[in-house]
Image (spheres, rainbow, N blue to C red):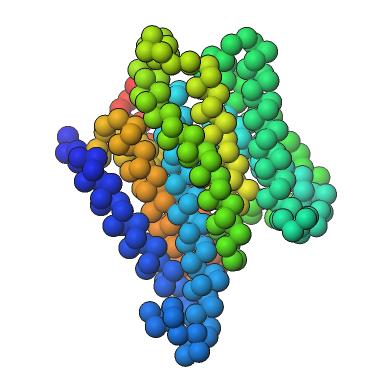
Length: 333
């Protein structure tokens, strides 16, 4: 039996780990960046620019994306009362991926109105998926969790099929670009991606943090939550929109990076337990550190080449899924 930590102790450990990771991982790579290069632009012009324009933005992007995915996974695991729920459960990632695949197939320009076309296409696709799932759910009447889940699965499968169809119609170059983007990756240059994720995290994460009590009650059951004064349908809609915004921001910047939203919340529950008020900060920090470490491994393991970070998280997520299956038993998931 794993001995659990107090939530405050776990958060303290993760704060220290986050600061250490953000300070040290940008220094690691094929090009050595000495500490002096951080402030001495004249003595170390190359390493100075690499650190401030490439590695630090990439580290911040990885950290914020990990936080967003972990918070989204925590919310959906509570909402669906299933440890295997992920932020991608309701098809938002598939919608965003379809938008990007369509933009690549049509050969749209690199930017529009100063914004990356792929990012805009991902946001439009994610919004389309959100609207479709919500419309299908409302057509059945109410906003039941089972209906929302089935609608999300149906939308996800449909959009995934359309992505395969677009790949089949594309030439070799565009097909490869679509496949590479679907693997997920962090190639931020400058701080535009950091700003995008910060806005998504501020809005979507803020909505989630305002509903932590409701998440505790929904974990017990919808009837129990309603008996405690929670407007269940309205709360579920807000949570769905918040997680969709987080996922849309991440997918628009990084592509679909899997398993972060499934593993991190579950591991934090194992380490400390507690209510969502205590679990949320630990989950967010753990997700940020986890994806940052995975990205560091992805860009250094076979340097100067680079492994898509989605491949690294999938390699870790498969064994984790099996461990979770045999630890709890299929009937308990």
